[in-house]
Amino acid sequence: MKIRYFDHAATTKVKKQVVDKMFPYFVEAYGNPSSLYTLGRTAKVGIEQARKQVADLINCDKNEIYFTSGGTESDNTALKGIMYLNENRGKHVITTKIEHHAILNTCKTLEENGFQVTYLNVDKEGRIRIEELVNAITKDTVLISIMFANNEIGTIEPIEKIGKITKEKGIMFHTDAVQACGNVKIDVKEMNIDMLSLSGHKIGAPKGIGALYVNQQIAFKNLIDGGHQERDKRAGTENVPGMVGLGEACKIAKEDMELHIHKLKELRDFYFSQIQQQIPDIKINGSMEYRLPGNSNISFKGINGSELLMKLDEKGICASAGSACSSGSSMPSHVLTAIGLTNEFADGTLRVTFGEENTKEDVQYLVETLTNIVKEIRANS
Image 1 (cartoon, rainbow, N blue to C red):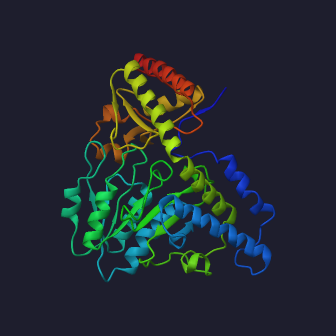
Image 2: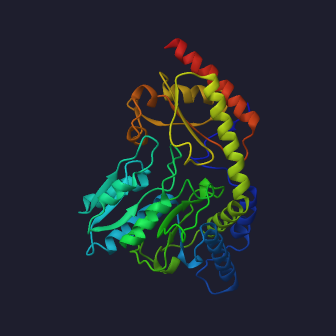
């Protein structure tokens, strides 16, 4: 049975070009980058080239890029690294109720350590209200962390407006751009972004590698002690193949950006139109105007999400639910709750995220299969 993969927001296949670029650093240029002999220096050159490629994707200086193990570490480093260093200046953080748990649980830890966190509401499309953000700022606000685009519903936040406000107020601005990097154009300078998190496995690089951009004018406390790697900010022998792979993936993403966005939008919009024609009692979640090109999030009234996923899997379709299963009963995710979705819809939420290898024929198969499964479940309920 052919497997049709529609869960690119969860992870992506490593691109062949990326694997080819990484391979020599496993078996030929395998030296420790901290070593002074040629084998070590060769590995170091690979890292610095990759650092420049990551920087080019978001328009920053290569010395503003710090390699990490992924988005979660980048988020932790950004929030804790800033707040722990600046706690004498203020102890207030502003974020949103729809952040990834890498941000929400980091904020929870900060609260347990005496910091204050404001969680902004979002509208029914998942976007923050700028006036609420402005009203939440106090004299103790040090950092605002708002995701670039939501991982569940694909909504893109008003990043440029937020950046303008933070610059005017002298507040640091971090964005979790794990879902956005490679899928939308990002310019950290124009958008006044001070820190940005990204992850390799969302853009065709391996799992276990990511990066954190930090404006060179900003100091932050390191979370891992040890050697002098990553300019004393992230100790530990470097994951050279992973770094090289991330660099190559960022290079490809920059070169292919326009075609990539165009193709994913076409697939997504075709999927939306077909589902709306074929299946009644549905709700499309998230903004249609401000949305990631490959994201679709649809709730099917009266459907159990776990059952839907299992039946899709039996037909060779990989997708994900918009709700988490707990103790045998489906509970809406914090994102769906925040946008006000009722349980009768939220319980049957399906996230489909498209990638470059998907075709229109794949989408037609998905629509046909999904239509039949929803009819079957509704008929038997």
